[in-house]
Amino acid sequence: ELPVVEGKQIQPFAVDVQASRLRVGRAVVQRLLRGAPFDRARLAHRDVASATNRLTLIAGILPPDSVSTHTIFCLKTPLDDDAQLFVLGLFNSFVVNFLVRLRVTTHVTVAIVEQLPLPKPARTAPAFVQMTNHVRRLQGDPADARVMAQAQALAARLYGLDRREFTHVL
Picture 1: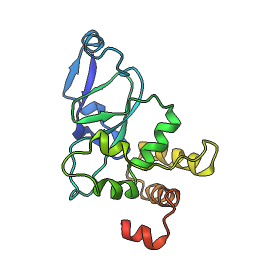
Picture 2: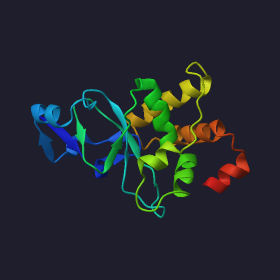
Picture 3: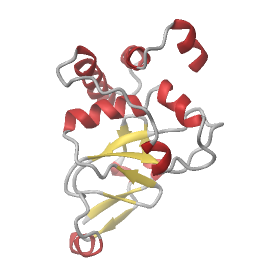
């Protein structure tokens, strides 16, 4: 049986699959979600949000062999692990959170996410490598304030923000 992940189980950089209250049989999932990528890890974000919450866009990576409820949107485009980690770092950044708050009411819809401008450095660029490394560490310890600060600063640099602009975002 596969765990069913709900939106409340996603925190920035982390998905608490162990807290799943519901499970569904693999055969049922295969029948209902033909072609759906539940057999691979995939970037996911909460749908329900508010511009007045501490964070509006909250994302994590659902593990393989899990499914989600309607309150979680999963990336449909197959991206390799490093690309998903890079985007996860941006999605959980204060800069992207700021951009989402400009557009959101109570739902972070696919349409809002698709409109987000995302920097696309080469995979060999130091910023890409650094962001994926930061995100890996934050997945293991989301409370690591030093690594979180480094990831936030890197996201601001990727968006070309100077100190004054980043202060405004914060």
